[in-house]
Image (cartoon, rainbow, N blue to C red; front, side, top):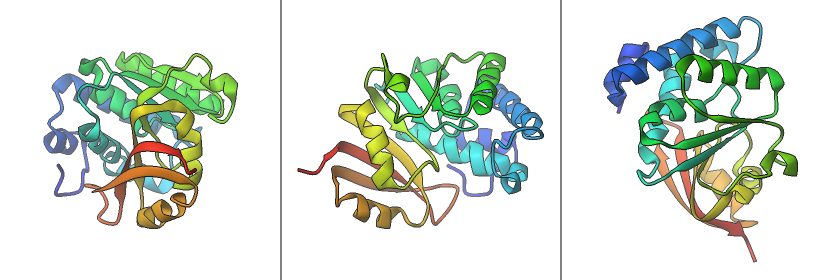
Length: 215
């Protein structure tokens, strides 16, 4: 795991031990992000020059938390594909079935373009996760991820319909992670574990199991 700032594809490769093929896919992804950002606001402009650390490494670290037996992952509010599309690329050889849910048509088009260029199969669904039409025929996922979409109390409401017994939620959060967990416990019952982020000393990845509404 990185002990220094990830400034390039090579830094990321050394930090996470990715294969050459995976690295080439991520390089293609980053180039497309830079190109599309000129016309579509995919990520905060201030983070673009630090994309390898702020977006790619921040997403890549989640791969280590996904059980080796997992076969399906749903990423809610995928945006520019962080973390869902990065995880699909990182774990392509594992046969993980990844579904990306994004309501913005232009961002969805970007996700399709990246997936096509890097030759990674993902299911991209355009629509809001709150809508039944978005979730129709989507089986419960073994892993659900989401980054920077909503505070945990609301995020749990969006993720719960996608999670079955034994499903794992992986939600990167900032310095307010513990406070969000406390607030969520007012309406939700769950087991939670906080994993320190390797890209931000103040951030945590919230691992959630046994999520259910409080009685």
